[in-house]
Every structure is written in C-alpha cells, then in structure tokens.
Length: 234
Image (cartoon, rainbow, N blue to C red; front, side, top):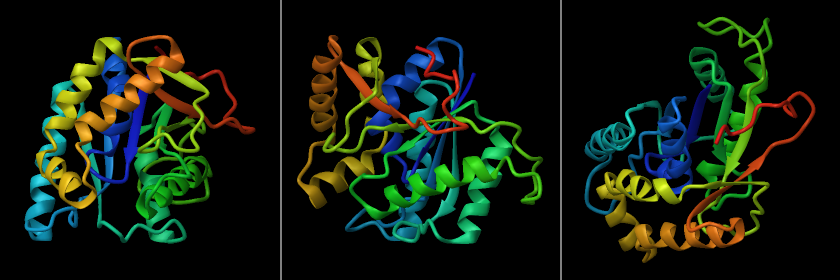
C-alpha cells in the first residue's frame, strides 16, 4: 500500500503522525512525505530564501530516518488558499503523480490558516483527481483514496476514531522531529513550546486513551465514495 502524508510545512507530519509512518514503513509499505510550503517564514533571524533551503534539507534528513521520500509543492508560508484554482490543480497533479491508496493530512479544525487550507485542498483534490475531464499533466486517478486526518497540535476538539500504537516507534518519531532544528528554535521562541516534550505529552495522552504507552490519533473521513475498506494497515 502507498501512504501519502501531506503537511502544510516541514515538521507538521513529524509532529502528528511520524510514529505511524515509521511503523508502516517497517511493515513494508511505501510512504511518501509531502510538504506543501517551503517553510520560509518560520524564524526570527534567518531570511526566507535561506530558511527555505535549510528546511528542505531538514525535511530530507527527517524522511531519511525511515528511508522514505520527502517532496514539496513549493508554496510559501501564509500564502496557501483553498479557493485558489492553481493551488487545487497542483494538488490534483500531486495525487495523480503519486497514486496513493491512503492520504493523511491536517484536520479541518487545526489551529492555523495554512493547515486548514491544506486540509480543504486535500479533500477537494483527492476527489477532483478522479474526474477524467479535469486535465493536468498526469493521467486521471482511478479511485478516490481513503482519507485520514491526523491529530491537531494539542488534541483540542479532535476525537480520534482510530488509534495507532506507536510505542515501538516513538523514539524514531522524536528522531525525525529532531532533524527540524530550525523549528525547534522557532517554536520555543515564537510559542514558548518545547515541541519534543509537547508531542511526548500528547503521545502519552493518546496512549492512555488507547491502552498503550504511546499512540497517535486519527479521524477516518467517512463519506460516500471514501467509506471503503482501506484502513491504516497497522
């Protein structure tokens, strides 16, 4: 099975679902990480173009921890809009190029505009990608992929319908997240958050709910056409 995780920025995927992706990769599944934005505005001191290059390397380093590919759609922080036709077309092309069986992305009630816009774009484009008369460079996607929303940053107003026990992969999750050194600094300076401790606390909370040491929570988007038998295979 091919699992495509789509995050707004480099590090979003690692924060919310890297344990699950590590577990899936160990089980032999194909895993791809896609970052929509280059992450050019997440620092007080490093200028945007230099920061974008740093974050691209950090994303590759994180993906390399579990031996998978990291790709970017090349958009800019704060400039992702769900009602933009060019953005939708780029997302459609992403899904037609990668042909995922299952897509993981942000919940639609996440905390910041880029995350919410990506959630809507993923929902829209995974469907539009199956329309034969909507033309992009790649052939039409034959089936709407299953869609899962990953936990939002603090778990507020997010009630998982699926829990994945990531106890054996939690150290790998933290290793992947630690590759994003520019953002560990940014989150501490901008938000006063030690993100490694933050995700550990949320992982423990979801673990308590799931009856294990560490867990990650997801919501399976169940609507007609997506309520298929494709499940997170763990």
